[in-house]
Amino acid sequence: MSPRIGLDLPALLNAAAELADAEGFEAVTLATLAQKLKIRPPSLYNHVAGLPELRRLLAHRGLEELAVRLEGEVAGLSGDDAVRAFSRAYLSFAREHPGLYQALQAAPSPGDELLEQAGERVLEQIYRTMDGYGLSGDSAVHAVRTIRSLLHGFVTLEQQGGFGLPLDLDVTFRLMVDTFLAGVKNPDSFKS
Image 1 (cartoon, rainbow, N blue to C red):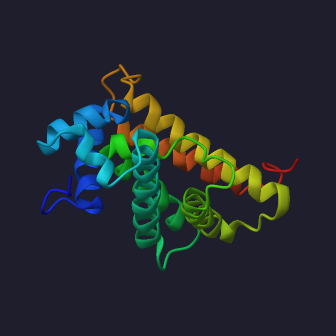
Image 2 (cartoon, one colour):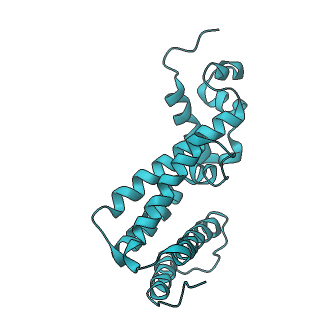
Image 3 (tube, helix red, strand yellow):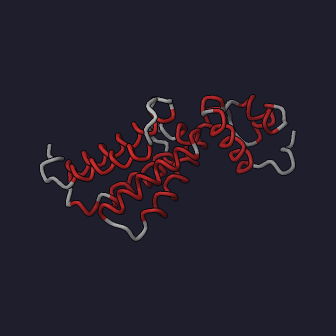
């Protein structure tokens, strides 16, 4: 069976990303994607080897889109302005693309160069963003782990409805980032 005219891998991934963002990453199956595209599930095998490959390609797409967003928002900034812009860009990506955000959370399989390189691009942006604080070695790693954990924790709690009180979440987010910034400026904060 030949591929449907107009259906190629980018179109398939667009549909899968829309499905993930609308219904959650776990809702992306070959059956649900085929239904969305109004094709039979076996037709998807003209483009992907199966569900694991589809999800891997979604993870790659999520990492690439996140990297582009982070690089664009942080360009030309440094210090606190860079960290705040990075943090806001991270949160806005997760809010706009909750399914893609979920897709990029799994660690790549060892030797998966596609996902490792895409993940490295995001990680390098975090390190560049933190560059102006005089951290190196283990201290830099601890600081990067801390901001990643804070951002991911906030996003996860928000996505799972974990913030039940009627307070402005954007204020909470700003306070969290400001608290991190106050700590990162203390030379003893990230020593091993």
